[in-house]
Image (tube, rainbow, N blue to C red; front, side, top):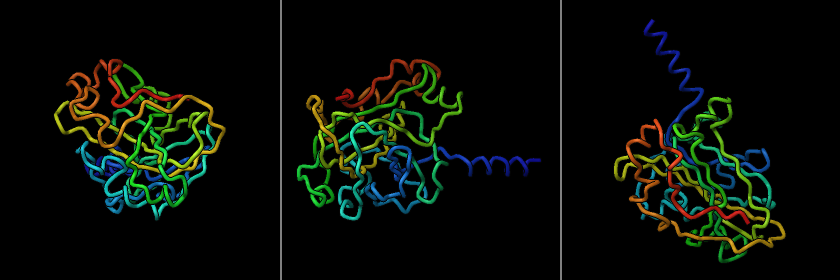
Length: 250
């Protein structure tokens, strides 16, 4: 019986995994594109279980390990402002849709390349001003994905909309997942950057407020170093404080 139980648990593990991950798939209007096609490849992409980021002062926190220099080998996706895009977490060798997010917030940022050519974007190290266009918080006061599981919604991808008045141009689209902890310097960070060209009329307010990566916040931020009560997930998530700037909506 114990042997059969182990087999059952193993099968569940094949179906869905909550583990370390990259955002190696970019979705545009419901279509997920091949992994790494538009997302800059990090140094540890060949590892089955990518190691989390912990050092908020490291350049690796911007787009993943050594991903500030992998733009030339990455394609550029075309997105019309107002379209729905999404990211999917995945282990390097895991099939899509089998890796779920850690408990914690999700963020999406844009940063415009200072050189507005395809080669300029691809060769850019991402040292620019980032404005937040989307974030996802907890479903309820006591669970990050409570309603998601309750109503059998997907937890293997996250969709958001590019603001319809985003100024046209070439950007890095940065996706981030934070797994906050109550122990100092144990909070896990996952970040990846896709290269995109956004089309549209613009016409909105100046994007902002903006931040730098690294530099947007530190390990003492109350959304990074959380209380034990929040870490246990029993209650209090309604009071969670999002790191980073407010969301720019256009």
